[in-house]
Length: 440
Ligand code: EPU
Image (cartoon, rainbow, N blue to C red; front, side, top):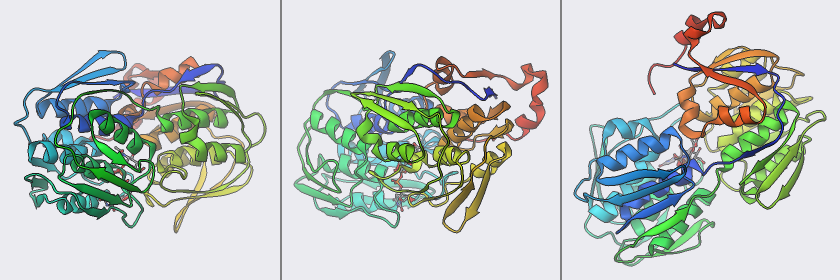
């Protein structure tokens, strides 16, 4: 098990590029099962979730090749397969996105139910409700969804759940409806940029979709989809994480290849806490030299503050001059990382509906373990801002969704290295190793 050794406090300078959006790439790769010819995707991030999904798609009869740094080519070579390998599905939530495309294109699908995880309950009732409304016959047996359909039929579906719209649920139902007979209306659809990107990809394949970016999608089913070349949007969560790195360290640098429009809510928070921001085309320059102000924030569906940056913002607010409160309407229990953040001396208290953060002037380096992707990023940010050394374990969580984040931070000047704990006699490897999770 590798750990990151971070020498804080970091001084960050220069420029760093954002990779392609993990969550757009994953749903688009799954949607490629619908295509009737080769697919070329550009700006696909090299993250382990993409590797896992590629393996799953190969099991499902696709050829998947990374032909250049960020280009992935895909093509169906055996359309008879419909059982998604359960060990791969259980590793990541997004693999459930193969369900809609398999049903629509191959008429059958067997896909394990994805479990809950460290960010809270992750039901799939809305996915199944939407697919059943399109005419699929769905059973759950021994933890697997067993679904069958002749040609799906267009209908009106409301996908809004108790915590708002569902992102991967919208992806599944949208993918199923593009090949359905007749028209489908998806009300309560997710408006996230990753869904808009998926929709643009489907349109490039020949699908007919209106209303992308709104909460009501209108789909006219077509008989067949063709081939496409598509460039994935920049990862807004990675961009936000890098911008917050500047804010926690009190530094100034430029994040390029970003889409500031997708980041508006985060940019507003960063301005409110005292950062200067300058946006020019795909470049965002951030400068934070003065004190940080406290703010009260609530993570909500897009265009609000993304739940996927809530943990990183909590780290930022541990350094503010006063008390902030943070809650998360999308995943109300997404605070498992807080106990690790407290090891840095952060004063974060759980309240009925989120956390209250009492700012302090400095965090101190410690040993901590990432338990999930964004919580792991929050701990890494704490390590960058803290006095002295931090050893961070659980890196496989961070590697699931950030393309070489440690390398990008090193490029900005952070003193950060990946190492095996046993090679570092002063790192007390036994204790950090003991706390590393054994299962993904
Ligand atoms: N929900 C239901 N029923 C469902 C589906 C969801 O009640 O059938 C609830 C969830 O429990 C949650 C809320 O609806 O409270 C929103 O969940 P959603 O379905 O939108 O989440 P997701 O599609 O499983 C995607 C991203 C997450 C991101 C969320 C919210 C992917 C692969 N994952 O998850 O990304 O946090 O949307 O924006 O697209 C991450 O990248 O770290 C990550 C967790």
